[in-house]
Every structure is written in structure tokens, then in C-alpha cells.
Image (cartoon, rainbow, N blue to C red; front, side, top):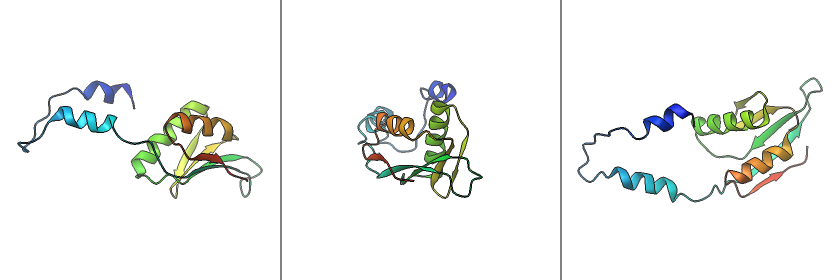
Length: 115
């Protein structure tokens, strides 16, 4: 998340729902379970002119969530990358670093896959 979005979070919210309670919304976010998707991180060279890319497969999320995770991983590894066909691609071989970061983010079933 960027600093701007964190600053805007505390703003006034209007709702037409008489049962709306903004405090319960924050509690729901804190009580969400860890990610249970089966994530596999694969180094791949084929069809890329001999250059290695790290591919993160198996995260079942919206395009926005994939983009957000891709941004975090790109910043963490200090590389470029993209999201295509539900997979995150990072430039270079960063498999071990990505697996460690994913586990730190709460993705419990994250492993290195052969490639």
C-alpha cells in the first residue's frame, strides 16, 4: 500500500445502511486467515533469449491483488516484472528471495518448483 492510501483510510464514511459500523470493517480485515493458495515459484529460461525470469504461479486473486503483490515483489527484489495470464513474472533469478518474502507475507504453501 502506498502512503497516500494509508492516510486517506481514516476519512469520514457515509452509508445508507443503518447497521453500518466502520469499526467492525477494520476488525474483519485483521481477522482474515492466512493465504491458503498453493504458490509455486519457478525459474524459467525457455523462449526468453537465454535470460532467466522468476514466475510466481498459483495465486488465485483479482487482477488488482495480483498487481499489488507484483509491485511489492518487484520493489523487494529491485527488478522489473509484469503480470500476465494470472502469473507474476520478475526479471532475473530471485526464487529463494521470493519464496522467503511470500512466506513472510502469509502465503504458507509457497515452494520452489523445478524449472
